[in-house]
Structure formats: structure tokens, C-alpha cells
Amino acid sequence: MKTRITELFGIRHPIIQGGMHYVGFAELAAAVSNAGGLGIITGLTQKTPELLAHEIRRCREMTDQPFGVNLTFLPTVTSPDYPGYIKAIVDGGVKVVETAGNNPQKWLPGLHEAGIKVIHKCTSVRHSLKAQAIGCDAVSVDGFECGGHPGEDDVPNFILLPRAADELKIPFVASGGMADGRSLVAALALGAEGMNMGTRFIATKEAPVHERVKQAIVAASELDTRLVMRPLRNTERVLNNAAVERLLQKERTLGAALKFDDIIEEVAGVYPRIMKEGEMDAGAWSCGMVAGLIHDVPTVKELVDRIMSEAEAIITKRLAGFVAA
Ligand SMILES: Cc1cc2nc3c(=O)[nH]c(=O)nc-3n(C[C@H](O)[C@H](O)[C@H](O)COP(=O)(O)O)c2cc1C
Image 1 (cartoon, protein in one colour):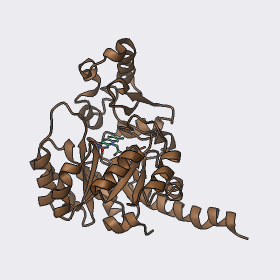
Image 2 (cartoon, rainbow, N blue to C red):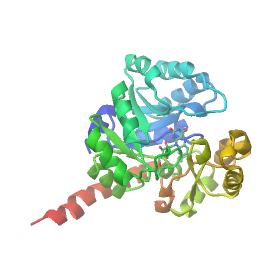
Image 3 (cartoon, rainbow, N blue to C red):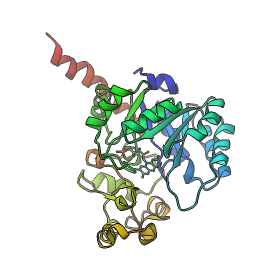
Image 4 (cartoon, rainbow, N blue to C red):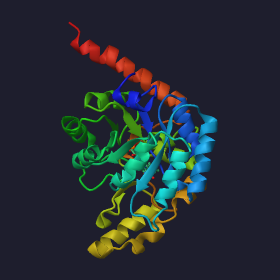
């Protein structure tokens, strides 16, 4: 399949694996890139720029295909060494950066000078237009369904994607709620030129997370996610569990007086405990509503091949059948 996204990133299939904290290690990124998509290492999961440089080298040992690095500019407890991370990316010869969170304008000249393409993740049309105006090469349009940070506008992809298509000139992928061939064809129909998946890629053999995380996604339905941190305007969609129930109770009790410190136990530093140790109630972890569409744990290649053959069959058989004379 050829779209402006496959051309831009030099990939075979228009499928991107979004950056995921404590999931996006070299193993997963390389598996996605080897399967013909674009794998992405999560920059900030690596505690220092030196560790990121090491992770990039590891990924390169596992694939000769293009892969990217995610740089997230969200409120964090301590501010990361962004110039150091960017140097590691440039020196590591990485050609794609997925930015997310705050406006990446400040970092674009350095990235572009190094020949790096930048895809910025946005949860609204206005942020997508801003990304285009500052010179991003593509946008990942992240609907309200998504796992992680859906922003504060709450516009689902059935509206957000065609709105983005109406306004944007640069190519974009659909992100949030994407799982299978149907998702890909729908995304293309709504104006996107590919799709970005997070949650679906966690439930794969190569995802380097505890087996209990994968099984929790398989067991979850589309009703099992919750929005947390809304009062802090840092909304995150997470899988419900005991810690999330506790967090939501604090939000209800404290109302507008809620501060980050009040919920630190449920959100700070919980990812390694969940993703590595499989302590499923250790805290709040991002998960999309798309969990309701995930019923198995295939290899990344099986998943990507299945998506592409399903998409092709939908386009050439089901949809073509509707318009046949
Ligand atoms: C466990 C998890 C961790 C994530 N961590 C990050 C992150 O560190 N940076 C980021 O930009 N997006 C992060 N995301 C968002 C994904 O990159 C992607 O945009 C999102 O998962 C898409 O929605 P989906 O889960 O419905 O596919 C995370 C998502 C999940 C599920």
C-alpha cells in the first residue's frame, strides 16, 4: 500500500507504533519496523541520553529498516535533558521523530537540519494546524478514544479525522482506537494516510512487557477504561483497576482543590512496576478503548500481515462489491 505516509517514512505499510512509556523498547520498535511498519522507541523511558543512544544502537542491531524515537513534552515531575536526547537521536542516525505534548517548534530546526522527519501527535484540529504551520512533516491525529492523553476537547475520530482532512495539507495518520484492517480502511476513508496504534501493539508476543499486562488488555472490554487527572487538565485514559478507583475517589472528594501531590502514589513511577513486574494494581497505566477489539496476542508480523490482508480484502471485495454494477 502506497500513501504519502509510506513515502515520507520509507516504509512498506502505513502503520506506526506510537511511543509508549516502558513498552517502546528496541525489541518492539524493531519488530514493527521488520514487519514493514514504523517502530518507535520511547525516548523518555530511557533515563539518560546515553541510555537512549544505547537503545538506538540495540534497535539498529535488530533491524535494518527505518525506525523512530518518541519525544514527549508533557508535564513531568522533573524536566528531562531534551537537548541531550536530541543529540542522541541525531548522532544515532535516526530519521524519524514522533513528538507529543507541548509545541515542538523549538526543536524543529535541529531535527530538520539532521534530515529527520517530524510527526507531531495532536488531539485537535487547531493543534494539527499549528504543527503544520511550524513545519512538522506529518501529524498523528489522536482521537478521544485513544490510550494515553486525549487532551481536553473530547472529539472522537469519526469527527476529528474528517475535520483534520478538511483543513490539513500535510499528511496525517489516524491514532486512537485502531486495531485491525477495518480500522485502517476506515482511517483511509476519513482522509488519513495511515494509522498509529498503541494499545494493540502491547498485546503482541514481542512487546517487552509482563504477560499479565497483555492478558489484562485481552480480558478488557471497551467499557473498562477511565479518564483520570481531568481536574489537572492532564487527562489520561487508563485501564480501570484498584489504584484508578482510589484515584477517582480522591478526585471526587477534593474536587477543584486536587493537586498532583494528592495522587502521586497512583501515577508517579508506576510504569516499571506494572510493565516489568506485572503488578497490575500498582497504579494508573494508559490503555485505549480499543482493548474491546483485542482478543489475542499474535506476533507483530502476524498482526501487521493480518491487518494488511484484511484491509485489502475490505477495499477490493466488500467495498468494491457495493459499487459494482
Ligand atoms: C501504555 C501506553 C503508554 C503510552 N506512552 C506514551 C508516551 O510516553 N508518549 C506518547 O506520546 N504517547 C504515549 N502513548 C500513546 C500512544 O503513543 C498512542 O498515541 C495511543 O496509544 C493511541 O491510542 P490506542 O491506544 O487506542 O491505539 C501511550 C499509550 C499507551 C497505551
